[in-house]
Image 1: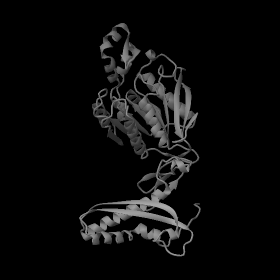
Image 2: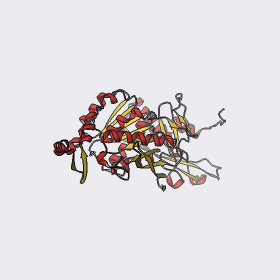
Image 3: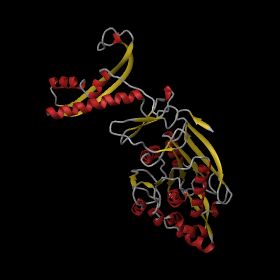
Image 4: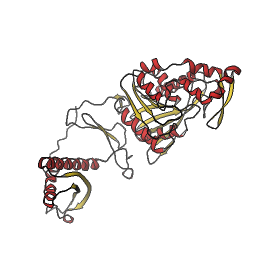
Length: 417
């Protein structure tokens, strides 16, 4: 097991048996502490768990608090078996075996993610993985038989001779007649229609391997909740890091709406029911990363890496500055609208520091000790007179959060029963 010091990700190599008793190789990447959720990743046709797309997406998700298992299907990568004897059905069985292995270790997968043919496989396997609450497909075909287009010139030879050597992405593979017969026997329409899980479809409109019409077919067959996100300018293999990061960010945000949270004791905890104005903070991840809930939003709070955190969210002081800055900007916007001032844009830049009172001309006298100094720089864009600009500077000091911070604050703390 290794540790990525910057992102605090542990990586553990796993081995488990499939339905035929063959050993499959996997890699589990997870954040330190309790993960937000467990995900199972299925790679593309003839690829391996170490292909760029699987590696980049899995690691980006781990950095956001997800534990992700990616593994090699039978006969590929470091897994045992002969690829020539595999097919789409065996891929489904391998996925179920991987999910069962996670469940046996107390880490049953909440989320299934599949890339290309792996996406079709997770759609077909989902009903056999009861712990899965959500499914994500990336550049997936709506029909497994679509993969036969990759060796269309050898199709007749395969059917007549029983097998053929085909060149796929610069490597030679033996494709047997049973593989063609198997993919042609699968229809995903009914399985998608009865998925009974939240579904996210990610697909590039310029995908030249699996056309975007496949995403449309999957979307039309699925029932709500379902979502489609266009991966503009991405290629089929998601080779660019920025595309992989975007995929991971999108999955993390989308999944948070549907997945149960992991409680401190390893059990499951759903999103809390809060009233307007209530905030709940809990250490779901362990270490310094915390979830912040409001009535309708979920955020992350953390400390920067140089302060011992994982930098998975703003720090508490950054949230404090954000509260003051956003309240300032809103107050100025409302004032300008009320007075019909030509304000086109407002931005607020804030910093926080500990200073000695005598070092700040704005601080009250008789404060020899250090105190907090918040510097607020306000940019006003618009055809405003100097008098109007100065008046708005005065209004900024009247925003509710400013008044709260500079007024007398009483904080009552008590232990929950």
